Amino acid sequence: MSTNNIFQCVTRKPLILCISGMAGTGKSTLSKKIAERYNLKCYSGGDALKELAKEAGYEITGEGWWESPDGLSFIEKRVKDPQFDKEVDSKLLGYAKLGNVLLDSWTMPWLLKDGFKIWLMASFDKRAARVAERDKMTFEQAYAVLKEKEAQTKAIYKKLYDFNLGEDFVPFNFILDTDNLNADQVFEVLCRVIDNTVCVC
Image (cartoon, rainbow, N blue to C red; front, side, top):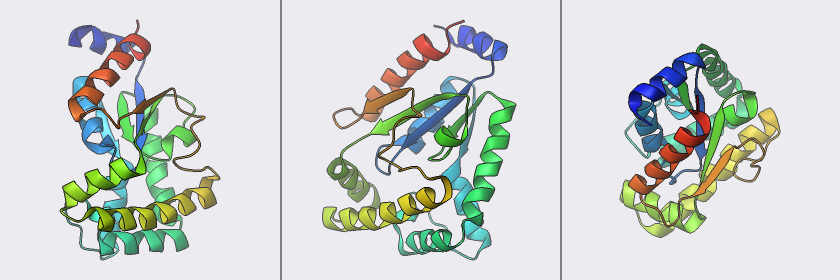
């Protein structure tokens, strides 16, 4: 399907894509590529939370900030004060109403009735290895940091919305195991799925 056909299809029925996956599945990079491919505006829940963290006085660094001491500290703050997450989710819901968007978010698959929802899956060991390579740390360090981060994050969403992040897949239309796929292969698979499932005029 050509880009023009995709755009015509999207303009007839506004497209809403949600991409989710735990750290180390490549969802953020992939979301940007998918959004560009389908002429969608891309909004990241993680980036929006970082902006709130910055306003709260945290020093924001580049990729891998969530696994840093500051990132983990902010997650602990969110556990105690759900207002940060509520504010971000309200913004993302507003963007979704406009249509033609891709939402890189852990919560939107549960909070949105509409949209095509994708979950990227990978084993914990594979994700820890990817995070270790990305953030220049040992596998053991990445493993420990991910354990701490994900336990806290799951607690936030269980308390706020009563779903089990990374365990409950009911809202998702498509689940892709990325363990044995590289980034280009994941992109290719998702484009085929979107072309043949979502953008059928």
